Amino acid sequence: MADAVSRSDAVFTVREALIRGTEYLTRHDIRGARLDAELVLAHVLETDRLHVYLNLDEPLSVAERDASRELLMRRAKHEPLAYILGTRDFMGRAFRVCPGVLIPRPETELLVEWAHELLPSYFPEEAAGGAWRVLEIGCGSGCICVSFADTWRDSLVTATDISPTAVRVTRENAEAFDVSSRIDIRQQGDFSGLPDGAFHAILSNPPYIAVGDRDSLMPDVRDYEPAEALFAGADGLDVIRQLLSEGSRLLLPGGFLLIEIGCGQGSAVEALATDLEFVEVRKDYAGLDRMALWRRRASENGA
Image 1 (cartoon, one colour):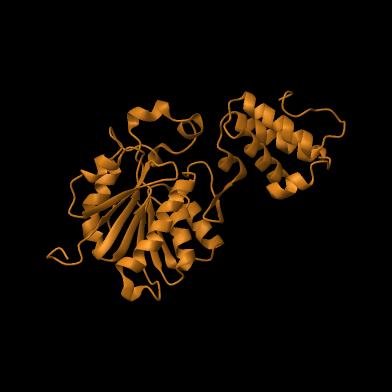
Image 2: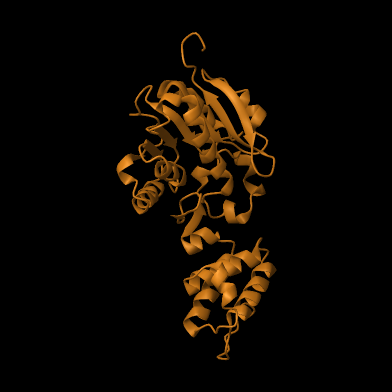
């Protein structure tokens, strides 16, 4: 790591650490090297990025220099920065994450925002209290269910995940945001024990990558994030098919299923067989297919 941060005992400033850290990560083909170097320094200095820049000429202690060096070396191996720092921001909240848990993405915030729009629209008689009953399948870090419960303080949420690590981290995040009393967190990989016709909405960021596309992923994702949260069969749609199959049983009349999908999967998911009524696909910030919405009809006659 001699090319990253000097081991000299000479005075070593925040500015020098930022420059050298950026150069080091760039040489190791890390996208967003400058931002990552800033975040590493902010973490080591127990501050934020703004104060990194306000203190560029301040010296680093030997301990701070060594800590920064260690974190940069991990990032240079493409270990996700969220795992290194232990947190990832999502909808203005800092969520705890760790290896074994899918890292929250900005695109997934769109799913939560859309759910916030849909519930008052589809169930206007209950909009004043916001006492929604929501199910999340595959909760991961809990970023979706916790953000939802933290916004709608009268809501009741059920969240499931097959991974014991994900369940543990979701519980920790629910406790951190004081919503644990309103989220029923279950470790399970199927739909057993979930009540019929009980939910206003089902939300999910399921695995949707085709197994054959594994080698095309960035090493940060492919080599570190949990495979069970990424891959779903030959076409990437296996879990989505399960959600569509179970959705009509679990939803209230008029309730909806809202899921994240992969870019380019819009036409494929629209064509999937289901008793639910397909509504639309929405795109993300980059103009790529990202979310799909289905609804259970409000009455037997299709109204």
